[in-house]
Length: 325
Image 1: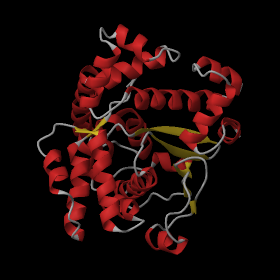
Image 2: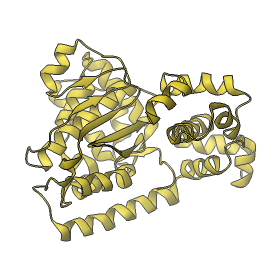
Image 3: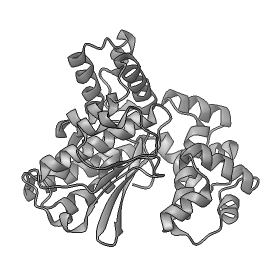
């Protein structure tokens, strides 16, 4: 999918609601009411849900615990598609493609590094990012183990943020090496595990679910103004709001109003695209930081460095060094 839809399947939101109920967390009634009856949950509303869930739980590892509780059914048709693939390698390749069916808060990339493979998660989240990244990666670890009949073994989990609780609390929940402030969010494992068979493999059901997932992706792309905006920013990163709005047949003010209806802003969307483009360019390692800054429309290299530090928590030079090492 060429652009990121800023919504989440209601089934994933349901995982938080069910967990809150089990834990006796009283989420705000108006928030719960706004979550009901939606075909997709706007990411801004999902942000509210996550913030309330984490704050009211009082547990710094609320996201990690939630990830360990997530079931395949919480991941919409994409979750079922992944577990019906023949091998782990096939499932992870499908995950990279169909992650937007689950939610638009980030994407995945499969990286091959010698005899190791890394599933990288690239979050695009403004609220409770650390807790949500932990939920994604702990859920990934748990469901991958389940799908392979317990055969999957992770070499380690790398997290870009600092620990949210004492390491002993993490180790009581996750029995594989954890690395914090790592400049990336990933699960790493030996490449030979890509051939692991999956216990729920079913090629006929997989093909049917792939069709459903394709339909969902097409629907997200067709109906999201956010996706159109992101596509234009990606093709013309130097353009500002007025120029983008003109291409869509709107005024800048009208564009702001329509995006606000989706719980978004032009600034947030543009920065999400620029962040993704900057990371991709730095990973490729061919262009200088100054050249990337100019391509992305920053006034100078220092402005780009400040923005990148805000996005990734490190300088472009350090990110490039780690990515190309």
